[in-house]
Amino acid sequence: MPPAELEAVLISHPQIDDAAVIGIPDDEAGELPMAFVVRRGDLKTEEVCKFVEKHLAPYKKLKGGVKFVDKIPKSGNGKILRRELKQKELKERCIK
Image 1 (cartoon, rainbow, N blue to C red):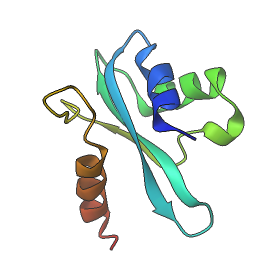
Image 2 (image 1 turned 90 degrees about the vertical axis):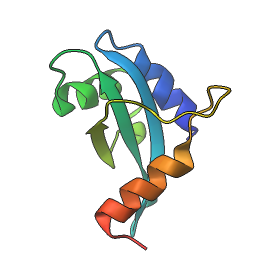
Image 3 (image 1 turned 180 degrees about the vertical axis):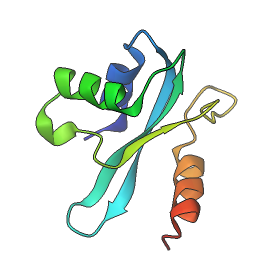
Image 4 (image 1 turned 135 degrees about the vertical axis):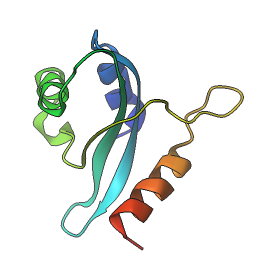
């Protein structure tokens, strides 16, 4: 599934200012979608997951998790730097 579809749903939430989705490695599924979210207010992980579940098919759930960040890294022309997010996340998870 293209990350842009999930990102569009996420940024339609009134408490989400920006979002990016990457795939993280999973032994069974190959990759699972994980969201990086710039939130407004006191938005909780569970609320984000329920919002996505309400608007998308069950197989599109954020099974890789949700991480709240202050800013989504973007190039000069506004393109999301997913590679940068993925490298940082994999390093934190110690996945090689």
